[in-house]
Length: 512
Image: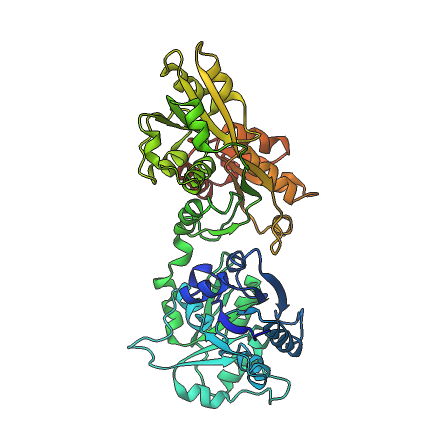
């Protein structure tokens, strides 16, 4: 068996948008991923389903795996011929112990690459409005490990640090905050020197304390700052209030759980993240095409000509046209067929393929769609409805209510439920780490419940795309809000309104 290869990939400080393009590409192609606790959960969501995911721990004071064991693991997996990604918070070579992890690889002639990551020493101050250099204030930056190795002298040379007259950034130093502040002042640094501590920077839990060197410890204790946190000392810290931007975004500090299938969640997630929300994408349903006993070609030849094809969901559109492609069916066979779609999301999916939608109801539900199509048909017309195997029967019944119409009700995909394997949605909700969960169908509600068995659902604040989805969520005791329209934009607007007004000012029908 040929040797595999190891990539040491820096995952950045937490925000998944700060993972480099190269880092993401390599991660998506991994067969084994060994990750640290400081890697953002948004990045962990990108670990391929087929890849073996191994938690190496490495949070301060809590090591799931000893460093020596991690080193050996990388070697063992590479010797199995695997593509191994060592996913590390920040940058592998900046206090990331990346060099230690290379020793066994080099000794055994294992190919490897280093993929640098954005370090928290730069990104976290930037997300807090603190420029680490400034032409008028400082021209040097010094990055220091706040805690020392067991094999090294624990004391820092504070006199040398003070003489640099530059910005000082201490990583992993919260536990040594007293020693750092007192040491700098004892070495001659001004007691009123601006200083800051930033908790969990670039994430939804980011919190910043700006004070002076003399008062920083007291203010940090009052703010109950937690690890991981960085300490910044220097004149540039005084600019934080003027340059702060992260917390001014509409959804800053909010964490939203998105439950849509992987193929459909990107638009919603991007819109939420653009407003500052942290999005946890944990799809609880999977779309699986139904193995058809007969081909689309034979259906068209036997049943056609169809007057209408009616699509009830974006997933139905994807499955339909992917099957057409697999059967090498030219879209021109649909010439003359009119197209109906449930709502804007389904319409957009169809029109992305260069086909214009002829009818979309004003109310996005099965009855309205079926009635609208029925009104537009003539006696003898045949209507093709490719949809979920166990979808709601309302649309088919609504069309059949019009005499003389023929309906070909065709199951094209199944909705199956899945449980996220790395991140537990139940645990995140029970820890209070989710502000709202977004549901775009009854099946996403059902999938969520399947994935969170035993959860007290009264803890869940659910944003629902329509009344049927809302009823499904309410049935489990969730607190619910319904978007004013069954669109992604309306879902985002609902969350933004709640963020501004607060839950208490809206009841569960506040957006009907």
